[in-house]
Length: 199
Image 1 (spheres, rainbow, N blue to C red):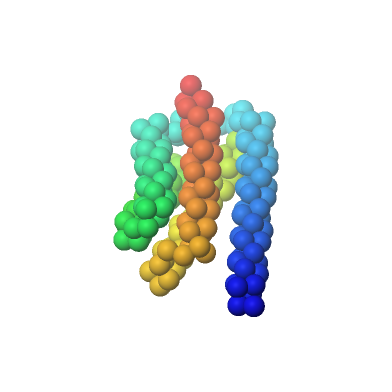
Image 2: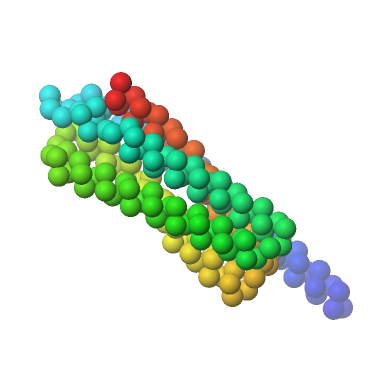
């Protein structure tokens, strides 16, 4: 009887895990649609500068290279966190997650600084349709990174309290996939917006 109960609970946990993972993939699909729409909008409005300021005058490639390097590095450290988790090493897992979220904070901080500099020089979200599309696209990605940072802090706290369990393993795996997704979006964004913008 006890064996049957335990087996039923295990099946129930696996069912819940399957629903959670499926929900996450659905979320990523909707996010892909969201970013796809924002990229399409940007492509349509990129030349609508109201005969004024353009991205070429404001985009500083070296600064955005720094942001790209930081985000790529954070993606690598999140991978190291997952590797540590599979090895059952809780301290390196927490350590790499902390490094990842700190890098994420640096990324967001640099992005906010870039926005402040551009606004100070006269390029606000209402300057033209181009800048409206630009700020909307880039800030949406930045907001997603900020959500990921908060999410990662929450998971780190849970790991410290409960250690590596089936639940925390799933959460670490999901946040790592989410982080890699944001990294991929940024590479595309960097290429389409910044590199093409300065050409």
